Length: 94
Image (tube, rainbow, N blue to C red; front, top):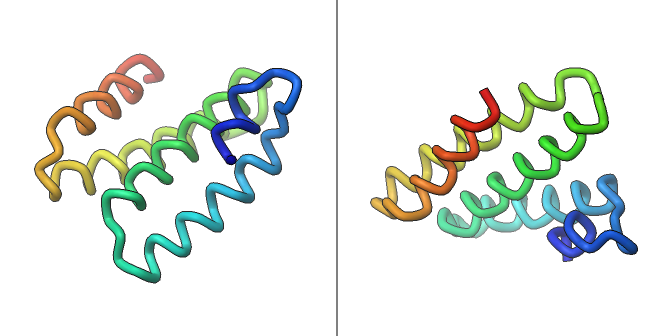
C-alpha cells in the first residue's frame, strides 16, 4: 500500500505512504523480519527522495540514511542483488 501511495500519480500521498511504511517497519522489527525490514527502509528512502525532489529540507539526508541502513541489513543477510540495488540508489543520489 505504501508503494502505491508513492508511485501511482492519482493516489500520490507521501504522508500516507510514509505512515504505512513506518508502521510496517515497526512490525518487521518487532518480529525480527530482517529482509522485510530492509525492504521497508529502502522504501522509506525512496519516499524521502521524492520529498527531496519537492525541495523539502534535509529529506535527501534522511533518504541516504534509510538506504544505508537497508544496505547494511542486506549485506548482513548476504543478499547481494538487493544490496547492489540499494547501493545504486545511494550512488545516484550523492
